[in-house]
Length: 511
Image 1: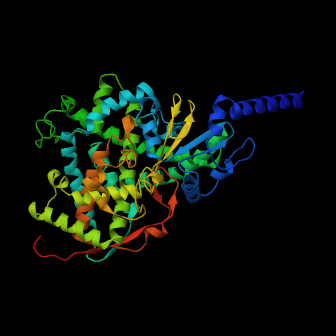
Image 2: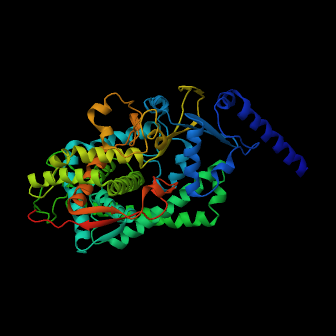
Image 3: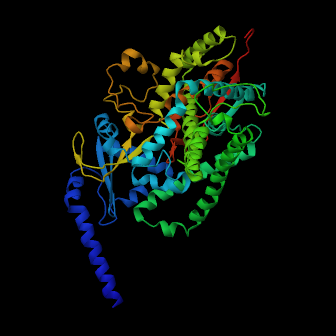
């Protein structure tokens, strides 16, 4: 009897597998090229390997099967695209705004916040959070970003000698400070152990993220919870959620002691320096304040607030940290470009008595071109994924509804059809005359369309505010070179090994 049941299950499995492979949807998918696989498990072995090897496989297959390819695993297919025309079809349409099932592995950590939510929930959250990045609020954020950039430079100058730094932990410390004080209204100064514990947990979560990504093909969530990695994830989540819950509690406590007066008319009189009658110095408006205000209206729960705080703390510090890391690494290896940036920064500093301002950050065009070129070569978010809600006609193939699509941004940014000599670092690619006729979807470091990055202006200002004082105060020289770079498969484009540069103090008179 038992054997008969197993045989029936196996027959049903084969019938369903045949339908998936050769039914209406399968027939369309089969027309797309890709590496050969095994019966039933498909290309599963391709994605089982080291975190470094996984990135290499995706990039090499994107070259081999340009501009579109597929892999299969059990009942799932994944289509990878890299042509700007195809990007435009997927990203510009409200019909394909849902993130794919790949993002489900974020749910234990980020819930269904702005990054992972779908449909009406995403639209509601986007509407709530968009005012956070209004120009007037960015102006007050910039003061904090400039202060953090100055603090970062002082930490190096205090050594009074040449300093060698592994860029990722050094930079991410300061970007985490910046996002918490701007978007969350909470300073991490004097809380180094608290901050370091969070950054370590994020790094460890990246390893579990890739493991879960592969296990998704096996649909074994209940088994994962019983494994050593499942138990480790539970401990890490306790740290990550504890970090954000503490931030939320501190901000709520602040509003409690000020009788909630600063939650009223948040857009008006944004900054005030007087302590008033409460004895509490007014803090700048923060994204978290908007969420707290919405919760008091009954529109958000405490869990809703934590989802968005978790999302913004992760995305707001990790992606920017990687952008700054690669920009500094490139400047260290290109002394002529570095000198030109320094000349531009020094001129601005002289005009403003050695200080940066919102206005001065907006008139650093060469530094901005360097940052944009760094994000072309090393986009922090190097792949994104969508789920088609209906048929999508790409340049060469028709995708059926409910198709998982991976958009390979990294390879698109190095496509020689759109970027001559794509591996060369050349900031002049972003001169106005060179941008004018370029395909708008050939460069998307912040994604594009209705689900583009809500904080991209903030990120560019932060990168300028942190890079400019470093270039003003130090010569940069490489120890590790980008030609030897190995990349981890992670949330972001992360070096697999320490990437170090030397900061050599500039001895100046006057300024």
